[in-house]
Image (cartoon, rainbow, N blue to C red):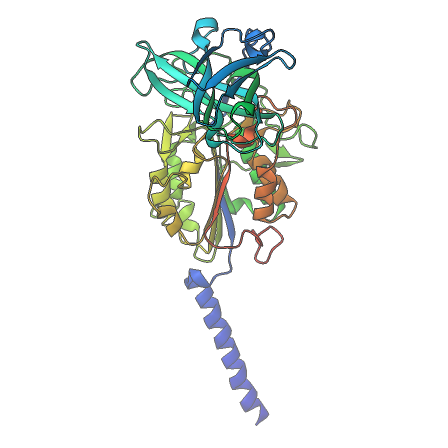
Length: 492
């Protein structure tokens, strides 16, 4: 009798197990979650930074002995003065009415001027005022001028109304391009003050140590024409950043079957990719005896292939294998532009065939990927546009409810160490390198983000105040950045 009872129970249990197994096989939404990632590095071309030594530390830069070749233009209630003790120049209002004044320096008259160069100007300022300025305050600018004397564009730094009685460094970056169809022939440097100064004649706006540098110069639409002003180097920066993300994911249990790595490192100057000069891996293409598994390399890393792998409707694409319960990471590093399609919207460049993916194309692919959770990192200039920083594509990004989105920059340039031969000893993104270092140590996304946000390079090359330029952004549609890490349950 007992056997008659036990046998049906065993049969019921076996049927239940079989049903659950079949459900797990045929209903992907019920399968155990997998962690998957696609990493794309689509370039390795960088150009050297060049300092303007004929100008820097000279009399026009340091104001030794007076105003040098700087001109002054201002309202009648503004006075240009020279401080012989500190060897700095300053603007002093004569009353508490609106002041609009600036010093200007005709760069192209006194210095070499290069088309397609990226110029960075940094200046020390001091606002001697007990009450913050009402209005724009103090700022500096790069004024691009055409052959008829018309201003084509004026790139401004951030504005400051008070420097808390301390000298403070500000800077501005501008790209000498002619994509506005108004040929740029001249450049002026501008040190400006504008606003109402409550202290009247007791207020002063000081300027000192103007430094100019020509930075990494890349013509994104055609990197070989016109020729860059300094030597092109196929360097470690982008590939190192992609490999850092790859090895961090491997450290935390991601399998090569679930990582799709697209890596452009063609013609590297020394044939190796070194993320960190002081670690145990001088070549991060291999760790010990374990090589990095690269799915798509060099000339095959194109916009067409990347779009294909992100397209869920393409059979066999990486995105088509992402299931509803999966956790998915997209990491992208390369040059970015907001000029190519002519309306300020962002593009992400591919060196192999000079192709690109626009933020519109990227969004339209990503929005169709159904998964439990997604983190997108875009590491390029103007990457904030990809994450809707300027609302260029309406509220679309905010309609992806399962997504955490992080960019290296807002609608401006982002910065890289191009190799590990620098004071900080690593190659890669000034922001994302430290973001992923912190994630690797078990920190939450939010902690990692703010650590990297507040990172300042040791003895940095220009731009000297990177945080005022690239402005990393984060948007969390899920509400878990304070808890999500590689150690959380479920893990990153």
